[in-house]
Image (cartoon, rainbow, N blue to C red; front, top):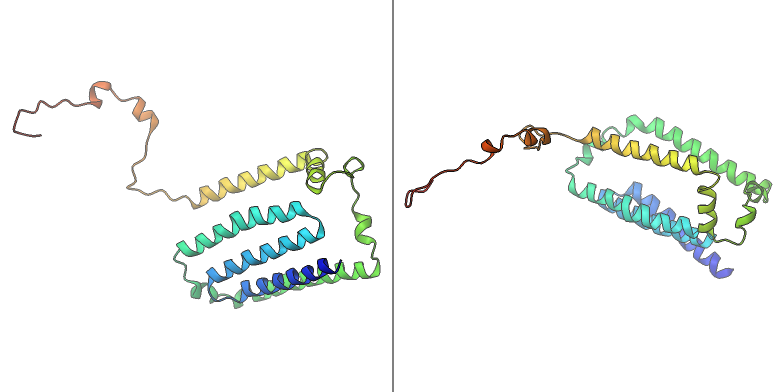
Length: 204
């Protein structure tokens, strides 16, 4: 128990420090690297809590895809970050309001746990048939039985959002040569090839 507590405090301290460096770093590339470090430490916290599925998802999805995508976008795009920071004060009231709401939610969660320590355990109702299963098996059984329609609906929403983002960011170049299948099929075979009788020594 003492070893788990020791690693919990290490992972928690590293997560908080990395999250602070994400918003305090002046270089966007360094901020993304600190974000990846925060994800790894959060995955360690999930492992200590027994949620190995969430830890694997955090590493594979967020670190392996999202954070690396952020890193490549920041490194490849020529973004004027000094110009982006100029309008920071305009969004400060909204950001302060969101931060205050999050702080109130954390206080309510911690306060409820202090007043009633068994409150968190009373909310979660495990599946009777999934008591002996692992965390990943129980989660998969729950998603694909009781919540299958919600799961499929969430997938459709994400697919539509992805297609919409591609359509909105797609820019057609005027001088780019593109294929038109209907024109290619309607071509006359006699006009598609031109035979030239080149005499020896003259060239085309």
